[in-house]
Length: 81
Image 1 (cartoon, helix red, strand yellow):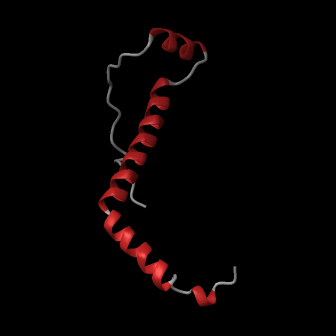
Image 2 (image 1 turned 180 degrees about the horizontal axis):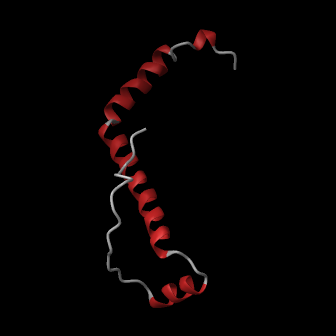
């Protein structure tokens, strides 16, 4: 599977605005803000990309589901479950 973004791209300093109490509590627990935000953004990007793909392919998915409903899945006769 192709990555959603360039994993080798350099890091870029960025300014953010965060809830001050949230920031204070995270720092007290030594939570790595950069790593945590990066992981959250990766998850959000993956979810958004998946939703976009499903939307772009909804007609093909619908047609395939109708075909399977009418004709069954390829290889059904060999399935042992």
